[in-house]
Image (cartoon, rainbow, N blue to C red; front, side):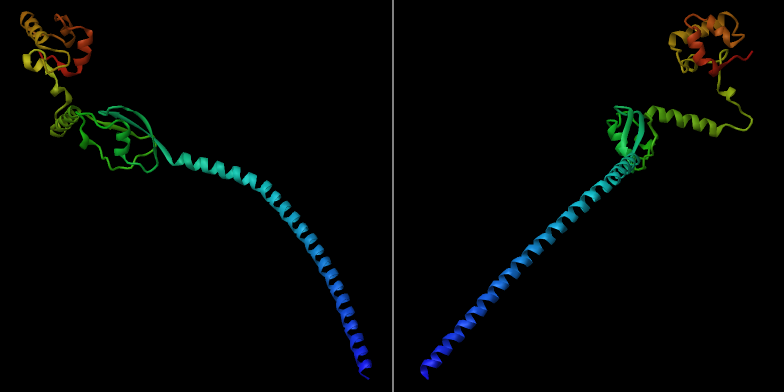
Length: 227
């Protein structure tokens, strides 16, 4: 009886071993097949992704060019050009970023000269494309003020002719205030006037020694002759 039980036990163990071995082989084959299928699917997906990226790159090229053109136009709009002249060290045309101030344009021109009338311009003002920034000297500013004051004080019955010098009555000091007339020429004008009984016309001034057409052209609007 014991021998029979022992034989049955060995048979049972052999059967279990055989079944387990077969199952293991089948499982191994199934695993290898699954691995092969996964590898093939993975390769197909990678190929599709690569094609999609290439198509995307080809489609993106025109967009990149368009973006480049747009950025170029935007850069042009972000710059402006101004002309700085007058009492600055280096007058000229300068390029500045849009939104810059007048003081920045003056700085590019080397800054103010020593005789510049700095209060004549608003340095905090925003510059505009194509603008001219002219810095007056202190002397030019005074001359403008004097001219403005003469116009403001002029009565309704007055004319510009009343500001002209009468060659027949003007003093040497008054004559020296004219452009190109110094002490010697003023003395010659008075001497001619006294020796010839006065001037009969403005043009006669060119008969005075030292007074040529150039000097006369500069002062003809500032003189008159009253007989």
